[in-house]
Image (cartoon, rainbow, N blue to C red; front, side):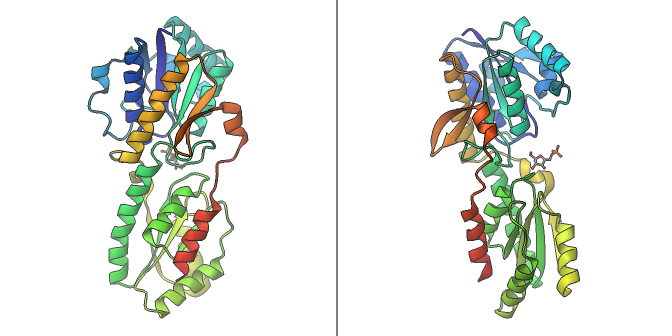
Length: 320
Ligand code: F6P
């Protein structure tokens, strides 16, 4: 293998740069050239590319976002777009591709693979909604971002004995909401995977105040409801007055944590190693703390592991 291509795609995720850096270093070690495409699959279609070298990835391991830029490309969903992308891959004599991104991007990686391009996908999304990887790149940083802000919100909430509703990202996954509920001691957690029991939530809040708690916190996953809707519900049911905070994109920014830098580096390096060994059509993931490659078909056939136990943990500690 003489030359590979790399791109970051979909919503940016902290650690994408660390992963890119690992791809470039691993390739350099093996005398392989790397062509980087800017702006995800859009850049692959438009041939917005450059040969990327070690100095280009210097000082990026600690940077959030992606220096390659990213996009959610509608054009790559079309046969025309895919044909154009393939012709650019052939034009550059690229023998293997590394695609760093979330669910949609990994489907794009599979499309390349179906066209005969040896492709390895690297899961990078704060949503943690991809099967066959315990964690995706960026999840840990997003959780730390949420935890830091919620701790601050609890300072003001407890000063005024207030109930706060915090809305977090995650698309259709409740992972960010569940974990952040556990680590911030939220009274309740609302996730798309489970129908919320509002009667129970109201009782938990009221009991808590009666037992002397100084605040109440509910974390709601965007895929389940909005902070505004939950606030209205509590008002309508029991006249409970709340304050709301929607964390939004601050969850996705900032310097990647130690965990994300390490995961990104391990996956980036493994992706290149496996391309060299002739593999393709697979995603590199973290399974039981080992790097494991899984066929795209198998990854997409399974729903991500929702981890019911985490929801139970969030509930058990929230109730008392
Ligand atoms: O998939 C990552 C994610 O941050 C989701 O949690 C969120 O729903 C979505 O992207 C937001 O997308 P955008 O940045 O395009 O508004």
